[in-house]
Each structure stands twice: as structure tokens, then as C-alpha cells.
Length: 295
Image 1 (cartoon, rainbow, N blue to C red):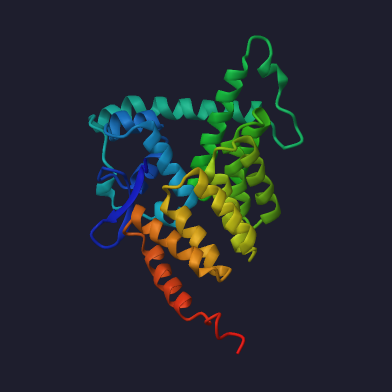
Image 2: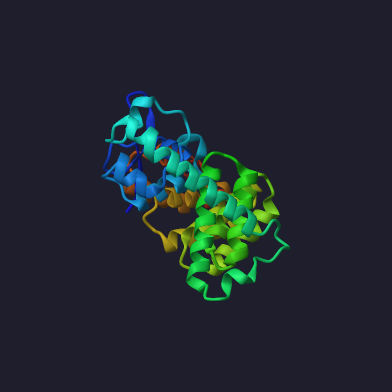
């Protein structure tokens, strides 16, 4: 089920949490203020779940220009508690807890890729499950930094997460996204391939590899990655559109047309798929007739 969809805010299409009137950027603004996913769901948007908050972060990673655009203040819903209560009691406590946690993470986590994570944290009663939770917390910090387009900071968090848990496929994929945004394409490709190997059932790593190859003009390899992505997640209109686009880049318009049609069946408002479908029909109709091409 798609958790983020595009709908009109009165002037243009904007991303909202599916089935609600909650703007993605409003959720990101609360995260920037230091709210956890639990606080957002309990105090600000009781109709949301932690999975919805994570979906907003993931959407911002893929489309930062859409998700992080400024939002009118009236869209950021205040908590249903008196302002004095928050200012006098809750906010100072939360700030102190956040600062303490950040200092602990900074001084206990590795400072470089070559520095191994302190094994003492994994010994003396600390379990592999607790290490995985630490890695997930570091990854979430990276997600927040990425959503705010603080790429060097996001890279540091993701690398620390992978130092604790090298099998965290999501952290490997997100580190690849950072490298891609920094135009470090060989590093991005390495991370995408690592993520695909760690989680073969995840379509996103193949989709991101396809986008990387397309940016390099390697349309044949991009098409193969988009085929893998659509095989794993056939109901994503962006995957269908991207596969059709790579087919158009290879002048395989007969393959592109059904992909654009499927994208529009899934999301009739997919503007790029509609435009590309018209283009593919026009190019397919104007192709040389094989019966007369050699005359």
C-alpha cells in the first residue's frame, strides 16, 4: 500500500500522507524540531503511525525538492497541550535527553570507516539485537540529516550504522543515495549493489541502480535493473514509468508503451507517464516500415 500520494493543496500537486490531509513537509518540520515518530503520532497527528513517519522520511530522500519545500505554519498542527506545559516541562526535558544521546553516540561511535566499532559494546552482555537497534538509531539520524539535505552529516551517520551492523541493507542503500547526490557515482553503485546483495527481495536498490545507470547514459543496464525492480514490485507506477523511459531511450517503443499504460492504470494522475505514452505512440507510428526499409 502506498503511504504517500500527490494531491492538490489549492495551487499545485503536493505530497500528503495517504488518506489524510497531512502534508509530508509538515511531518518533516516536526522531525526537524526534535520530535520522535512516537511524539508525532501521539501529540500532533494521532491518525498517523510510525510507518507513516518513516514513509515521509523515505519520500524526502527520493524527492527532497518536493518534500522539504516550505509549508504554511497553519499546516503544522500544534500539540493538544497548553503551550506553557510544553515550554516549562516537556521541551527542556526532551532537549536535555537529545543532547545527552547525541554526545553518547558521538563519543562511542567510530570516527572513520577504518576505525572498528568498539567490541566492548557487543560483549559483556550486549546482544546482537541491541547492536542492531543501535545501528537503526544511527540510520534514523542519517535519515533526518538527509531529509534536511545535510549530506556530509548523513554520510557520517550511515557509515557509523554500517560499522555496527554491516548487514543493514537500508543503511547501505541510503549511503548510496548520499554518494549519488554528491555525484560520487562509483561509490553509489558499490553501495546499491551491496544493498541488493544483502536484501535480494528489495526492489528499491535495483530501481536506484537503474536511475544511476540512466544518469550515465547506460540505458541497457538501466533497463535490466528496472525490469528487476518491477518484477519485485509490479504495482509501483514510478518503476513502470522508469522502465518505459529506458525502453524509449533504447528506441524500443513497442516495449515502452505497455509500461506507460500500466503506470497510468496504477496511477491515472501520473503526468510523466501520460506525456511519455503519447511520445512513444508517436515515435512507434513514425518508425520505418520493415517491408519498405530496404527498397
